[in-house]
Each structure stands twice: as C-alpha cells, then as structure tokens.
Image 1 (cartoon, rainbow, N blue to C red):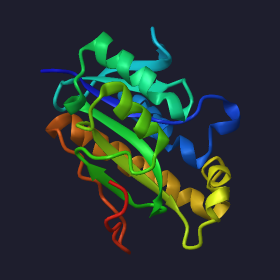
Image 2 (image 1 turned 135 degrees about the vertical axis):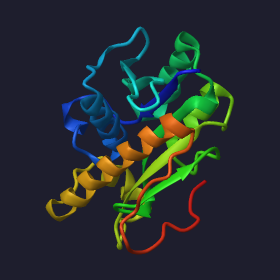
Image 3 (image 1 turned 60 degrees about the vertical axis):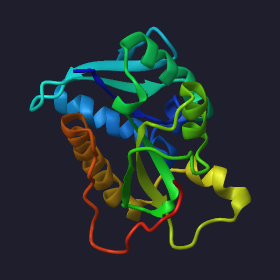
Image 4 (image 1 turned 120 degrees about the vertical axis):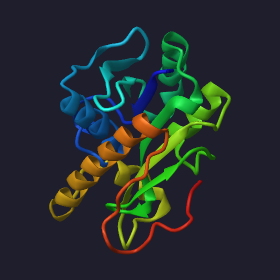
Length: 199
C-alpha cells in the first residue's frame, strides 16, 4: 500500500511555535509523540518523521515544512516525488479562522479557501485532490481584515488554551483514522456546527 503523508503546516522558529498559525505542526508533533518517532531534517525544505501506524501497519510520513506557510508547496512537492506519495494519500492539517475555535472540519478535496499554505500546495502539485483537515481558530468577534495576519500569528489567549490543546488531540485522532481508512472523521464538541465556509 502507498504510504500516507500527514503534512502539518506552520512557520518555523521559536517566535511562531505557540501561535494559532502553527496548529498543523502541533498535530504532527502529537502523532510523532504517540508513535515514538523523532523528527529529523529532510532532504528537502522540511522536517520529516517516518512511522508505521500500529493498527493498520501502514507506513506514514509526518511532514513539517520549513519554508514558511506561503511556500509550503515546495516541501510537499519534494515529499511527493521523493517518497512516491500521490495527492490522494495526503492529509494536510491547517488552521482556519473561518471556523470557531475547537471545531474540526475534514474535506477530501477542494479549493484553498483563501489559505495561502493550501494555495501553495495546490499550485505545486497541480491538484486539489488531497485531503485537508482544518482546525478552527476563530473568535465570536474577529479583528478587522487588515489585522488578520497579526491575529493568526498570535498565541492563544489563556482561556483558549485548554480547548486548543483538546482540538490538537482530536485532530491527531482524525489523522490516525485517515491513515487507516483514507478518511478523517473528526469529533467536534457540542455546539455550533462549522457550516459551509471555505472549501
């Protein structure tokens, strides 16, 4: 069976480590912890961890691009070529400010929905046929459009941290399900549905 690739998007460097935009990194790091595999520098612009999902015994490539968010496609393209992973075996994990904090949303394919990391991957692969798992970071009252870049690069507020940490664990569960079945069916807490926002 073709290996699965779980690609967590974020920005490299200590200043970004705990920010909303780095939730993708947090999820692949949680998977590496569960499976007791270390990350190491890849041969391309990313860190990589090679694992085997215990229940399915399927090979998995955990990927954390080191290109900064808007150039994530460079890393994903290299992983695809080097490890022989087609878009259909990829799950890209990203933050999404259109979704309320704590809400997960899975789609097996689709547009970038305004997310620059996804746009870069679509351009590099010349395909929208990869799965994506979006992690909500939105607030009831969002900042003005011109301040959104600062918002996604900010840390979670103290009262948000427990929900954000739980969301990372549920996203890792969904990623494990993707490896086993080819689909990620995330669990969401009771509350508002995520609705039909970005694709």
